[in-house]
Length: 195
Image 1 (cartoon, helix red, strand yellow):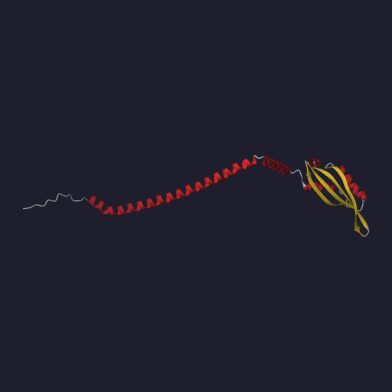
Image 2 (spheres, helix red, strand yellow):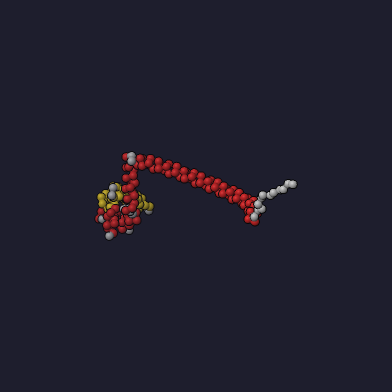
């Protein structure tokens, strides 16, 4: 007679429970692993993009640094240095507002008699002063002389000189006398005279 022995231990409730959830847990683990791999790949791609952007910025910074070095070298040249000094001088004059056209026009207007007409005014810088050239017209010679006298007595002008005189027809047989004269406008004197 033959006896079959079953030496296996019957599964417990815990083992049956674990076996029952093993397949879903494996599927969830595999899905989690796929999600982790996808997130890692995305993070790696973002890292590479940021790394490329940083490399681009570093290349741009290096190019700008090279350009700055070249410009500094160029500024050390005598011609550039002289140009820079001239620019700084002009900027300093602008900041000080040494020449005000409104002040100049006011100073000239106060000197012109009613019978005199200013037909031309030209100006050019001359050191700390401004060289002016006037052409004035009047029917009355005394009014022209009065203007020139006012110009000479003014604290804002110096070196007044008549350089030309002439006549022009004004119509109806009247003649106008023209006088061209030069003077130096004292830029600082204009401010001092108002104070």
